[in-house]
Image (cartoon, rainbow, N blue to C red; front, side, top):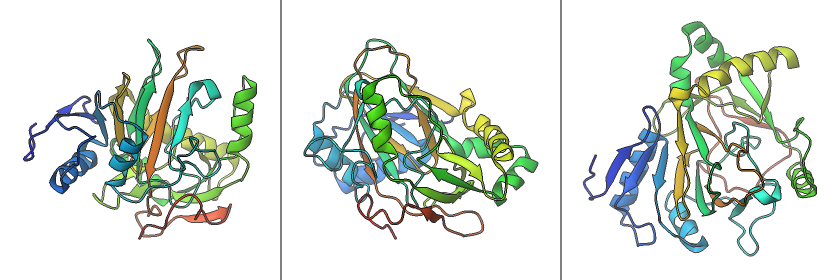
Length: 299
């Protein structure tokens, strides 16, 4: 599909994902182009820009077109000298091989995330992105009605698999250096489109009002709809690619299938607002306090 400003939007998945062709992200993008990219993001949830060859400054500038930026992470250090950039370095033990939405353990998770490939392995190292709105629509009506009423507690401190290396152990220690716990609606209403999506993922550990066993069972059932193959797009990286995805209505997963080969991405995230459930109630922080050091407040 061609846009009014001249670039092409090519679907790469049946329910999620499109490749944007004909846009140079290093250029001074006109507001009309940014608006059309945002419209494509709302529709397709994840956008791939091939061969952009941006540097850190270029990635920061592009991400900032969609709103104020967060710093790199609430607990994990940024790239040296770049407080807004998180290094996603497979060699450092940062292997996000579980389904998650970025930083849902705070009250105002990012609105959107950008990932830029710098070093990619010759095989493996893909990123899978899932459409949580399609997952919600897939739920049988009794499960939808149940999900609509539920709230989940998300936290960065839970029982991870044992780190395999000293670097991974150090990263794990940094990740949980401050504990956050936040209650979010299991069904989030998208603030721009009004779509309903399952807002769960790996940081969602318990359902309010239920015990650990019942919580695990329910979350597993809901999560199984998110990760249905028809709701997923697989991004195969080449150096210089950039992916932009809507963190409010997707989950993602990076399979740990590239052995000890190097893989390095840089992540920049756009500040978001507090999720709102279908009854109009906003998320609330339980533990960890404010996150002013990480994300600006978004009205």
